[in-house]
Image 1: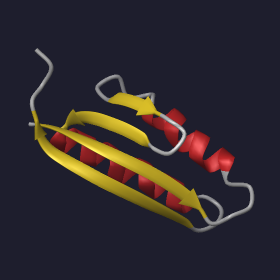
Image 2: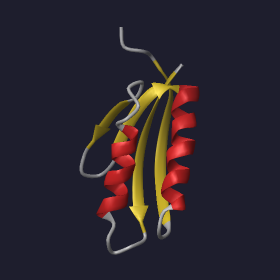
Image 3: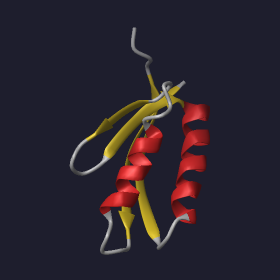
Image 4: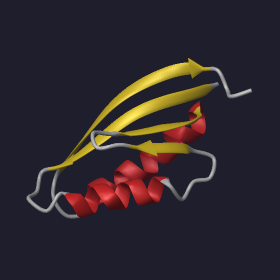
Length: 83
C-alpha cells in the first residue's frame, strides 16, 4: 500500500532554515520516495512501511540536533500506485 504524507518542520529557533533544508536534503537521498517541496510543506509518497521507517529515522535525527523542533504531518493512506 502506498501512503502520501504532507509534512512541515518548524524549528523553534531564529536560524530555522538550515534544519529544514537538512531534513529535506536527507529525504531526497531515498530513491524509493517521491519528494515534492513547496514554500509551505513537503509532500512525500512511498510504500507505507518503508515511508514510516524513513520518517522515524529522519525525524529522530532532526530531534537530536540543536534546539527544539515541531513536525506537523497529514497522512493519506491507501493511495493507488502510479500505473
